[in-house]
Length: 205
Ligand SMILES: C[S@@+](CC[C@H](N)C(=O)[O-])C[C@H]1O[C@@H](n2cnc3c(N)ncnc32)[C@H](O)[C@@H]1O
Image 1 (tube, rainbow, N blue to C red):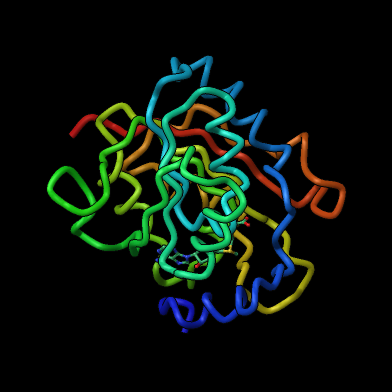
Image 2: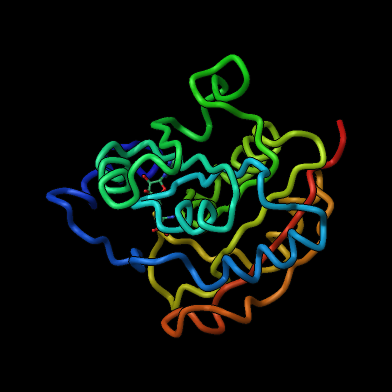
């Protein structure tokens, strides 16, 4: 069900604000960028935000000087993102799993970095390996995957699905070198103590 755009699009019906929407970039973005800067990511680099929703994180990255693509397969999410933030960001309607993303596809990848906030955790657990493969595919070699996940969803059925630290590490390791994996220290109060931040570098093929 969550593999289909219709499922997600319905949350944005009539301009609704879904429960996960924070109306501003996650405070963990600054923490992620500090880790990524230490690994060489600088303003001017290209960054994609998969599952960007209403685009707050994408706009936050653009304000920091990055060249940003906000990508989502729910048309109403992108409509809301464009209404809020205009064309400072390139908004792309695409499925993150699509093999067509990339230099020859409709979206201008591969990118220097990914900022992933509540997209990886939204995936059905059986799709996680394919998701990680897609992240590797859409990054240039050496590119960075910054990802915020919940390791505690307070017993609620997903999505989002909790991803324990060890699982996150094991999923990433075949394709990524992990530079940072720890509890996020700057979470929104509603999420405090339940989020992990990972910054990982795509291995050379
Ligand atoms: C939980 S929402 C989070 C939205 C946004 N990141 C935020 O924090 O407000 C997950 C988003 O991922 C999008 N999404 C889920 N699977 C996707 C896929 N395979 N390709 C592109 N977007 C996807 C959904 O449409 C939805 O907007």
